Image (cartoon, rainbow, N blue to C red; front, side):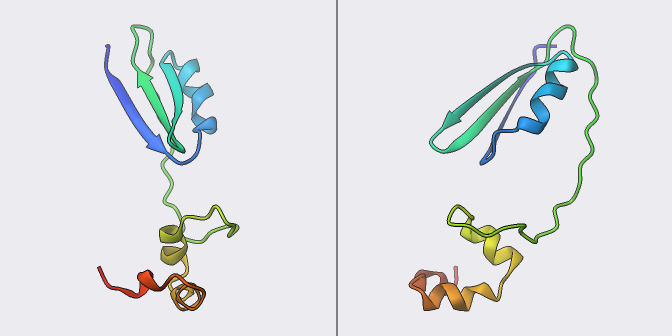
Amino acid sequence: MGETLEVIEDKPFVDMLGRLEEAGYRVELKEVGGAFVLRIMKTEDSMELRMEIRECDDKLDEITEETNVAKLLKAYPESLKILVKYGFSPLRIPR
């Protein structure tokens, strides 16, 4: 009881909030610098909650101006040549 977990993500956790609240957890969601911080607090009434964890296939459903470049390159490594061609030349430098 009284345990707290904070999770940071670039999406607002909308699929989790209802389930957490129904299970008796107190939740707070804040947007900080373009990221979302979800704080989950265990209460006296919190029930054990099991969530299915699925592996992410690395393919993207859609590529937009908001797409994270690292995720794009992980999903489609061949896109590096295209990005470098259009001005992302620092990506060419190995780290």
